[in-house]
Image (cartoon, each protein chain N blue to C red):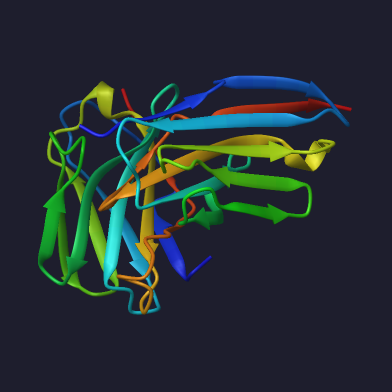
Length: 108
Length: 116
């Protein structure tokens, strides 16, 4: 079945450093979505990418969708302690298939 | 949070007992989903519903059943709970009006279930 792989599983950074998480699908996706889950919280929708090669920005967050619509990345510039949490990608082919997430910790 | 509530928020039960988790929404969303979240596995779909009395299985449906007799309530039942069903359970909805345009989902606060 369809799989969505996400790496790394964990990332520890010093505040101010950049952070990137990568997502790869075994099949072409109709769209990809990113969610953030704070410790003890629930997943919260961040953004959806639909077009091949699409790039979207939200303040310090940059999201990319690959040309083949099989991979995506989330890059955070100059991390802050408020960025702590787990970031999930979710690929769409009917229902959403979630990656296992990247847990980000930020040391002040 | 799209008007989604889950109950109970925490539950501890014993192996072999039946357990029912409730997801309640107030905004008439047609699509509702149940996921479980476990360390190292991310979010996995258990069952989903696309209308009253219309449900289908997800990736990890074994040991679970669901019912949707009203638009606002989606129930997840563990007929005979096992320790492997210890998990955090999230309900999610697909906002009404967006179905067919996007499959962005909005999640409830979750239920932490422990099966001893």
